[in-house]
Length: 293
Ligand code: CO
Image 1 (spheres, rainbow, N blue to C red):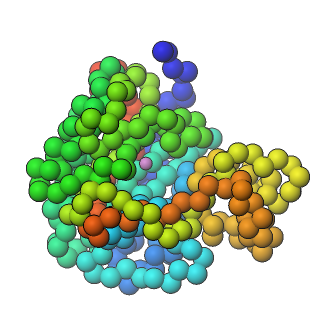
Image 2: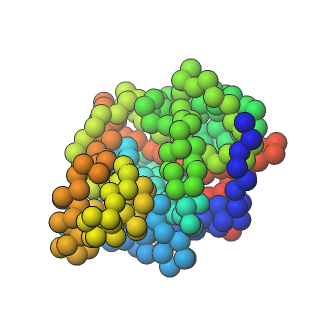
């Protein structure tokens, strides 16, 4: 099925901005840095580049695999040896880039094998990308790279296709083979995001991660809510982005319109490393969009 042509330059620009935000987040994640300050610096960088965060800066730590963003009163600071996933998104008029990397706080080198496994898996997965290739081949390369280091891929977290204003557009890119019948199509934008763990390779839902998303347009009857929908559309947002008491109250009234995200915890209490790029399924190969120029 032919795909709608997309404005590639806009997707490339979003990719560069997200990559810059990722690198900033990695640099700021040092011992003693406050998790909320790092998240806000990442999001401010994205806005300063003329884009919007496509989702809150996720700073999941150690056994937290994904979907934690600081709340407005999170005072936690990073400690040496923390394994932190800096997972960031930027969008330009709905053209989204999603990218992540893992930093070991303080450069303690305790978890190097985990970080390298995620990097190897991302590299090997991307190397499989071309039009017409089965998603399963990408998944197989990811799983092999992680298992080669004596670790496990997290089976229930997947990469995903991306469309305008849709972060998870319907096609999954699993981190283990045998889970997809799909093939990649030229012109498609996908995020590939392997997670490596020394745990059991599955996640469990933890507490609320301070991230929500409108399931649908709540309509104009509640003007404050309509204003929030106008800002966030159906993309994930941080509860701390609702800054006024009126906005916070509107979100409390709006629970039925909202999907809320729990933190994903490694089920065996394993440590988790992640690496992610947004790539274009280009003619013949992948073009990595989330790169620093
Ligand atoms: Co993603």
